[in-house]
Amino acid sequence: MRDWLPFEWIAASRFLREGRLQTVSIIVGVSIGVAVIIFMSAALAGQQANIVRRVLSSQPHIVLLPPPEVARPLRGDVAEAAIVQKPLQRTRSIDQWQKIVEELRMLGPVAAVAPLASGPAFAVRGEASRSVNLQGIEPPSYFRIVPLAEKIVAGTTRLGAQDVLIGTDLGTDLGVTVGDKLNLRVASGRGATLTVSGVVDLGSKFVNQRTAFVALPTAQALLGLPGGVSAIDVTVRDIYAAEEVAQAIRAGTGVEADSWIKTNAQLFLAINAQMVANTAIRFFVGLAVAFGIAAVLIVSVVQKSKEIGILRAMGASRGQILRVFLLQGAALGLAGSLTGCALGAAAILLWQRLMLNPDGTPLFPLELDPRLFAAATLLATLTGLVAAFVPALRGSRMDPVVAIRG
Image 1 (tube, rainbow, N blue to C red):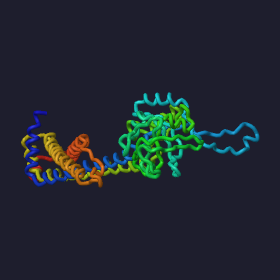
Image 2 (cartoon, helix red, strand yellow):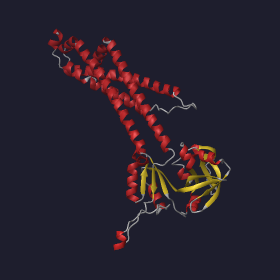
Image 3 (cartoon, rainbow, N blue to C red):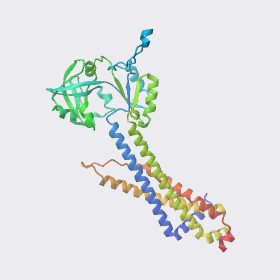
Image 4 (cartoon, one colour):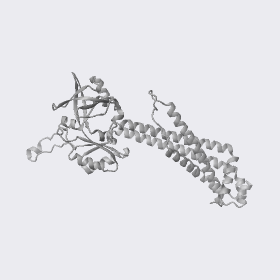
């Protein structure tokens, strides 16, 4: 490699210097292309992460539920002719839920597991009442799935046997705040008077109006589930593998397992559409960069045909001429990519500074991901190398006599 490198570098750099205007124009073009790829990739990734974070920060990735009750006809002539109606789905416990929880915690893709007892109830304050979704949780495990501590707007996340956490809109509707008493009742007539220990904002008005968190034993007593749980919430490490993990859990345990991908099908389709759009943008920008480099180098081959002929007549091999133009393509791609990375980083920082929410926070965060810059640099350099192959091949195949005469 050391035998041929100086000659190729000298010839390639001289050709680039002699066509300064062409060199600068293609570097500017590559820079703009790389900057667009970096900024659009960061923007789409940031927007996608922001949407997923807002939707999934208040819910688990997978929910395990007891299998639905099924009515089976009795054997016999009369029973078989009768119409069998679907039974009412009661609040039931998951069989052997402790064993299932331990098995799930051993699975590699699973990040957190939390059992809970949930069901409908009424929150009563004087003459006012609201229907709520009562959720009995184990705070340490549940907070790893839904970080309620980050959503507290008043009070604390303390959940003793006599405490309740409520959504902000539920507190407004009932006129209660931290320290007030709240009566929770279920359809069976069971009830308990609890103290509001905290008020949380779960990011949705409907959810804030309909959610009340209590300790797991309290919910079990109210819902008639002594020692049982009605659901198991699961968070996985890769959110886009949630459906595959849910199917594996369903096959291994026999319980119903619904992933966020299944329950938020429209959101998942929108995220996929964004990913396809991002890929398409990068492809067409990269294609435009490749054609720009190829066009400049083809013109360079035509303009430098006499020089190429002289070099060939002086003993330069076809391989050396080929490498001269490949080096030009790689150099153009590398120089343009480095400049484009700087432009892309500046655009991201400018976005963070100018595009703000009313409270002064960024509209959605964009990260200066080193992997994105490295990938863009490598892609642009390889694109320049590939784009240079055809003109390089053409230059290497020139007949020296014809090139000098022409």
